[in-house]
Image 1 (cartoon, rainbow, N blue to C red):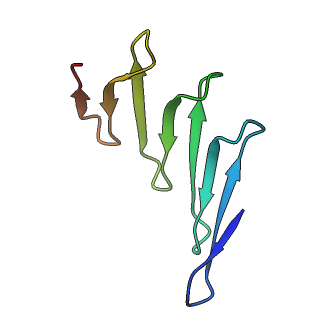
Image 2 (cartoon, rainbow, N blue to C red; image 1 turned 135 degrees about the horizontal axis):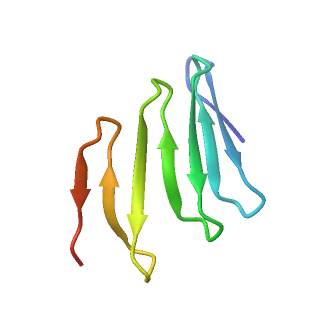
Length: 78
């Protein structure tokens, strides 16, 4: 899938067979990719600068922690 902004620059979106977003490539041709579990939950987001964000889930599929590209952890209590 492609989105073209008003200046004519394209952003491309790629999805897996189940319709989950797995990659975004911007107008500068830099890509962000998403790694997913089989059920579709996002495990990691790989950013163009090489940083990686990751997520952890509980048994109900709710996010319980997020680690950003700098290694900083945010824990969520539900």
